[in-house]
Length: 418
Image (cartoon, rainbow, N blue to C red):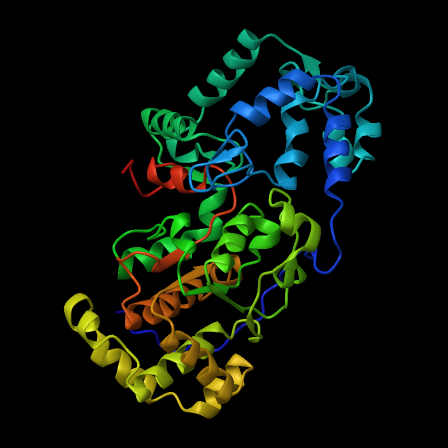
């Protein structure tokens, strides 16, 4: 049990795309657009959709199926990403003769040009790029690596579309060359989760499978807009709601996509839409610790904690109680942006639930006190004994396909595989 001292919030710059909200998406339009975008390679596109693994998110679909649920499992994000795999070669001559014209294009316009078909090199002072052979490109890379001290050599990997095998080989190459300067984009997003989870639970990953969502009494989303960032999860939420799950959202902004969502692979939801969110608590930006501490403070006062689990499986409970006792309600209300009554209402929802899963994302992690944010979530879960049993757990939800694997195979500077 982590002793989580209260930290006053600091505003952080954030941007979130608006959710689908009450505006019904046009699924047939999306499908028609996907067909048009991939019209030059229709059979290849179909093979990727029906036999490939999704390179968009971390939920593990194979083809258009899922290992948890029956029926089609497909989202518009994957349809939109399909053209990245099927698009043709860009007119590479423009890299030779039209750099000024390319500079005027936006990022989406540059992507629409197509994939880079050949290695291209531009030396300082050159007017444009020059097409080279793979042997020449690899020789150039090898020459530069040999001329660079290991402590000045670094490798950086993105997170979408990279397999665990690529991550593994990349970190092996880096360490063979004498450096541990290897990192990946995902660590920046969830390094606070990894640190907090390892310091409290011992494992820096989700403690449950996504199938545990279906059948839990309470599903709590904190600083996470999964309807936009992990849209395939909405099908899990749909079936969880059918099984009686109550969905609670804690966030500074009431995401429209979490209010109502049209799950395209479920006929009923595709037509009528699905209400996802049952309860909403609008915390101030950076006010999550205050809100969660206030909730836990009330749970302790009412005796609504799992004393047997705490005694058997946690340490530091007495210190945590003492710390919370020193935090007065006025301070917790001021920094959380919510009243004591709202903290009590949330505590009552937790007390009434026999099982619960807490899910968070970058709304909690991308703060200077992100580790403390996550520890506050874990404290709440441990107080109820919601770790280590079916339909209970903590989930730092990831965004892209290779996020968790990249960390586990050692594509980070301070850890080896495993």
